[in-house]
Image 1 (spheres, one colour):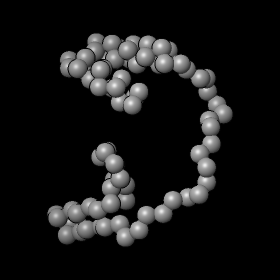
Image 2: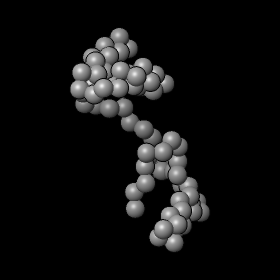
Image 3: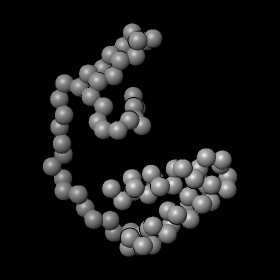
Amino acid sequence: MSLNGLPGMILGVTIPRLYTSWIATSVSLDEQPIKEPTKGKKKNEAELLQILTEFGKSRAKEYKNATRYISPMIWQTFL
């Protein structure tokens, strides 16, 4: 079962039409440390901002209301 697209961790789900409920009874974490990526090029803040702005402008040409999503997309990326 895959549930996604919501902000935060999903700990309980109910689907009335299927008469089904799932509730988390425990949460466990792996003790493995997060490793730094070894592939790809490093980007600084200015380069990333330029890439996101260009992406937003290209989408604005294709979709009618895409320009209103550019600023929130940039904020979410940098937060």
